[in-house]
Structures are given as structure tokens and as C-alpha cells.
Length: 225
Image (cartoon, rainbow, N blue to C red; front, side, top):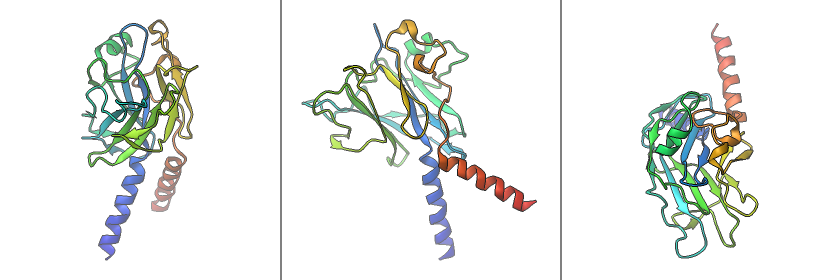
């Protein structure tokens, strides 16, 4: 029983650590041909193996297309271990050409038009299809609803509308619902500001739980001395 209890405890800690990985930025709608990318960030204190994790994108406009998979979704991450404070970025060729490297960086390529240009729900799942994070990006249309394959969900974060329009994108700034809109016009992207997009750079304040884990780790280290 002790072994089983220990395994359950380890599984619980792993699930808690997974919750520290979030969808940190998405850019999907820009003037002209779209620059597009999605970034996930490990805001916790534990390295996470993200092999086989996926980004699901679901049409969230009320009507006949509601609940349909967008842009070739799901997109599989090929990143492997994501260390504390690290990010992993998938972007199309236009975004990779537009954001100078350094300071920005991309780890994987996806196709053009992968992100919906009207209300959508982005869901991050682990290799077993468990939901790790979810974001509803909305233009404010009547009846638009966060969903997974047509089943309504309560997202972890709702972004938009931006003056009645779909935000070009968003960047999370903390683990308490803070986010800013990424700019629409490509003339203002890649200017070094969070609003200009920062693929490959983590600007999220760590979760309180992660800080607590760091504190416990330091305490354990002191006890071992």
C-alpha cells in the first residue's frame, strides 16, 4: 500500500507541475498575409517532458462551423523536455522571417493560416489528451462560445474582443489572468515590446504554487546540510 500511495503522490505532483505549463502567446491575425505563432511556457520549478503534447484549435463562432477543428489542428509539439522558465514556439515562415533571431526564436514550423481569424478556442493537452490549459480568443460575436470539439468549456483565460474585433493575438503576463493584446499591424511587430510579440521570451510571472515549490526545495536543501 505504501508503494501505491507513493505512486499516487508522485502522479499528483506531476499533474500539478504540468499545470505550470501554459499557452503564453498566440499571434494569428495581422494586416496583409498573417504572421502566426504559438508559444507555450513552463512557469514552474520542475522540468516537464512535453513530447507528444498538442495544441487544439476549435472554431468558436456561433453557426454551422462551430466546434470544427481549425487550421490542421491538432498541432503536435516536438519539443521534449521544457525546463523551468523555458518556452517552446511553433511559427509559420512569415513570423520566423519577421521576428529577428536573436532575440526571438522558433523551435518548430507550422503552416500558414493555422490560426482562425475569428473567435477560437486554443487548448493545450498532454500526451494522454488531458487538458493542461485553455484560452478563448473572441471577437465578441453573439453566441460565440469556448468549446472543445463543440462541447462548451470554461476556459482558463478569455482574451478579447479588441474594440469589437478579434485581437491579433495575446501575450500572458502573469498566472492570474493578466494578458495584453499583440499588435495587429506588422509594421509594429518585433519592436521589442510585449505588445509587439516576443516569441521565445518568457515574460510570465511564476505561479504562487511554483514559488512555494521553490521554497520547499530550499528548505529541504537546508535540512540535508
